[in-house]
Amino acid sequence: MPTGWPGVKLSLANALWYRLLSMFRTISPLAIPISILVAAWWLLAQVPLFTPARQDLVALSPYLFTAAGMLLSLHFRRGRICLLLLLTAISYYLMTTYLAVGPETPKAWLVYRALAVLLPLNLLLVVLMREKGIYSSAGRMRLVFLSLQIVLFLITLREGSQTLWVGLTNPLVQWSLLERLTIPQGSLLLLCAAFCLALIKWLVRQSPIEGGLLGVALAYFVLLNWPWMHYLPALFSGAALLIMQLAVIQESHNMAFRDDLTGLPSRRALNEQLPGLGSRYAIAMVDVDHFKRFNDTYGHDVGDQVLKVVAARLMGVTGGGRPFRYGGEEFTVLFPGKSAKESAPHLERLRQGIADYTMSLRGNDRPRDDGAGEGRRNGNRSSSGVSVTVSIGVAEAGGNLSTPAEVIKAADQALYKAKGGGRNQVCLSGRR
Image 1 (cartoon, helix red, strand yellow):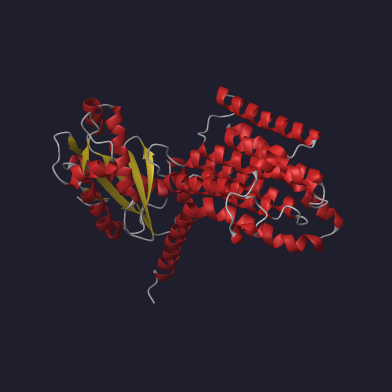
Image 2: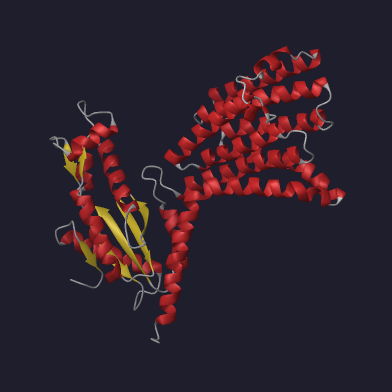
């Protein structure tokens, strides 16, 4: 067996680890909420076996999650999540106060029907809302709107008036399958609408907040369909609150480690990955040719379009490459487990794909419809089309290059050779 084999095995393991980590980061906005809900359902049968002290802690946990979530929401100015945290905590209090004895009393039914209307309705509104913060006029108006709902509910509760809530929860259609559910049909319709809209937004944006709202919709369905089941309000209210709390943390992490313009991981994320690369890897530095000329000629809006085009091509790089935005018009691609020579064909394919793409500038005559714009690019290209090229320098670890910083420096030097040699080419470190 060759002496270098263990190092190769380690590098291949690192490459596999990075690929799995990348996949997890993509699906985690959905995987985490689903895991929390599954855990809550499993705990439903375990809590009766807990000691009284632990059962009290389960009953208290939604309030603890609310406090922690409110601190995070206030710090990161997440008005939508703040609204849902308050609503869920209030709903949990009402469930434990009025629904704990079961559905026998008129007040229990009044509270249940009110919650069956207000929880799905406000969730749908939150999904439809854009984030406006907490201290803005829009944020204050949302809190006022929630307060008005609470006042309306308290008035009907004090008067014992069921009319409003019964009218809003009457069956919409006669269907035996829906009649088996406790949740009113209108509430189910609102929850389905909120879930579908949140799913669409998540597919478009890959935002942890939207993924969290999907989990909250499922938690609300369980709460409203089995509201009198012992310990269920505590577990699923707590699950909804924890999902929102973690969504704020994930979203804040993305803000710190992901570039807003291109959607690529940022330089901070790159620096976080470098120490764990192992002993065999290559690093490529990618720079947009004549980027200043694009900005001076067409304006910064076109410059931003150019960066987005290059970033989109970088996201599709083959060979296990992981792209990052390094800064300005410069990008980095990591190739764990590969040498510079092994990475070069994938970088050449990337360079060619960028050079072959013609970007149509958005002018007054450019179709707003993406399909029409794609047809123009693939058919007759207008005079407003521009092409962009990149120069790439790549270096590998080993020899005198023992640290990632040294490899990046060598790749940067190779990049300048590529630019000096006429641009629009890939240059390997140490080669002429």
